[in-house]
Image 1 (cartoon, one colour):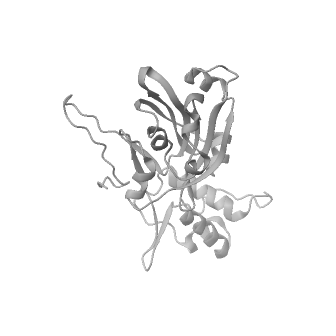
Image 2: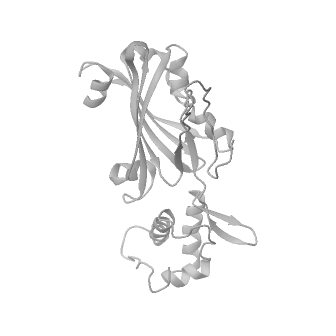
Image 3: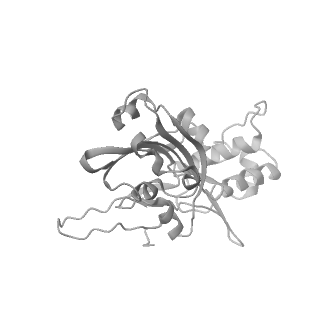
Length: 263
């Protein structure tokens, strides 16, 4: 990006200049504009956008806090392209997976309520439209960076398996497995734009890419226990699948960090 190609800032906008700069740089980083290269220096960005160094420094610090940039003493600022590979396996305990590579997740419970789920989840769970499932919404964060926003709906027959205190700090699958023998999980992952909902929940721009994971978990006799959806920041997470070609092999999930190293 050069001074002639830099987006023009709207000085009449209620959005602060540093936030406008942050948003533009974030879009370029996510789009892959800096593959493994040193990022622009503060003086370069001042010249590109025609703004003060204090404004540039504030924008860059926000990107560092979000995990998109890394400062190296004496060398400069670099784009952080490390993503975490969430590995699908029998336990699906993503909290343990993140902790195993030194990036523990924090949970914030936004909803814990016995209420009627949206119609599509009532249908998936096989319950009446007016039946009350346990509705749980949680935010998962790594440091100051929001990783995902999770919606979960637990079948009324299994709702007492999870209490509020436990839902604030533990894997829901782990909690359910203590009382119910889960035998199968269906997960579908697709890419999309954040849109208004994703932007609000994940703290990204509406035009930023996100990953959407739809899930259903079953116990014996194909009885659905839990269904839901997760919205992920696509600049922070990938999904890793290991498929055995030997039907008799003992398959164990492989957990890797964003650089492909075994954890």
